Image (cartoon, rainbow, N blue to C red; front, side, top):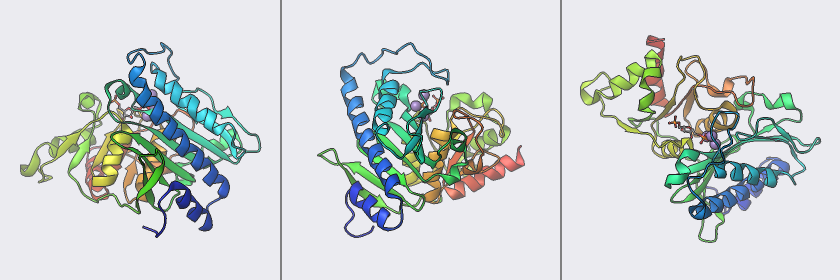
Length: 323
Ligand code: AHG
Ligand code: MN
Ligand code: MN
Ligand code: MN
């Protein structure tokens, strides 16, 4: 860890000294502040009518939770005053919102990830992606070109995990509600026999995924010769923070290995892949690296298979053997 960096502000100041654009640093500062406000909104929601839903449906066909829209509105309000932001793209808003015609960066976000969990006090998050785009069509660029990606995890701790493309830094909100550096340069363990998949979708799994999971469940006596553990939280941010720290696999395949899954490319798969790959993880749609996908739509869905390098190698061998 670089000496003397303890706050997000000092981390970003060092990054600017190392060549990161001050304009980008200003956007990151605003995103981090917005995440701390959303964390408070979530804590306050205990006193909201928890089970009310707005009755509105977003472009995904999901019934929106009040906090989905509250968090999205918080993000828009945080980005509005920033001269360097050209567009804002939110899971909860059909079209890109034009903020500044002279802006250089488009900010793409999932304002509340895992929102079905927010009523039952399970960790949820926000996911952020920043790309250089001054026109609408420039937003549709491969994830490998991102300038910044981060997620906030609203759990026992409020964490902010980010990458500017070269390594991952994890910040935690301290007792004063300010982000302080916890770790820098963390690497995803190459192995951990722990996989996360929604087992109730078994009938929809492509053959390679089904064969892999079946062999995982055979434990030490099976062809993978290791006892596996399984997790499914229902919040991508929670799963991937666990995988960042202790390794494992996160799997949300489509019905066909080359088809779309549930998760969205621009504000879930791309930013989470940018972070995981910066820490040595591997992220695939099942047929290509997620970060190489050329997007055709703001809310496009992809298959998502990501996690520990060695575990992904094993999974991909099953997919190749069972297309
Ligand atoms: P969001 O709440 O932003 O719509 O995302 C939910 C996503 C992701 O966070 C999670 O891993 C996945 O949906 C869970 O899907 P299932 O409910 O189908 O298990
Ligand atoms: Mn949603
Ligand atoms: Mn999400
Ligand atoms: Mn969401």
